[in-house]
Image (cartoon, rainbow, N blue to C red; front, side, top):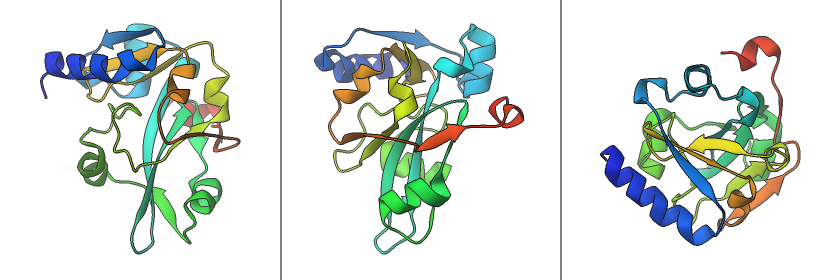
Length: 171
């Protein structure tokens, strides 16, 4: 999808939510969070990543988790228990693209399949503003976290993630 059509799609998804937002263009080569923050002057603490997880069951179970960039998603306990599976992991790039139509580094909670639960770590909603992926590696969405609460299938989850060690947050 070209950047202009992705921008229009984002506007169509975000405008009905009734929360002010900004669409921020970025170089696709700089879309990964640490590079984006360094290149464009955003703090890692205000960035949130949308990560697709999979519960290894038959059938497979999926969820999209929104966590602060400096936090680590608790896949082995919290996510696994919430999915109700014995094993859980991060969905791979191909699986994420197939499920969401989005590339890693640009996954956004906006426009996800209607049957995909969206779990937002409670630390995200405590921020003044957040920077989220925009559905492609060419756009970011900047808004107050309450924009997430306007989405269907959203649940705020306590301790879905925890602050990462300093050396892990930088990478």
